[in-house]
Length: 94
Image 1 (cartoon, one colour):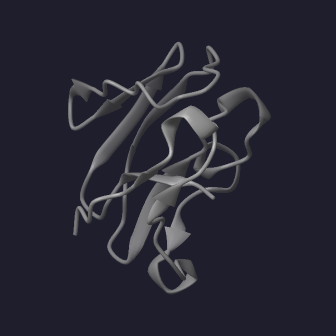
Image 2: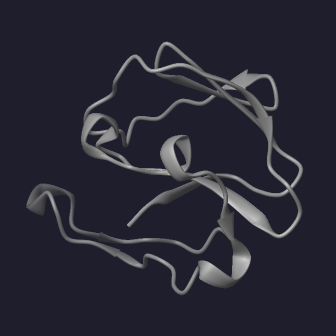
């Protein structure tokens, strides 16, 4: 499972592990383990998404294999079950 960080038209950059989307740093309290990787500025093309894992050092994601085509997104997360002290239903953001 990956988290959608950028949608078509967004500009994404990573600076020492911090995600900058459209010029603003994201407050990513959900990241389990961050790393210090940087990535040059990219623009998310139409019909694609930029995704990252929450366990960044152990995750392969758009930093490694690029943008995800819209047709490859097959579901949405709706429930958190781990860690068990954070059980919750997720509210729709779409």
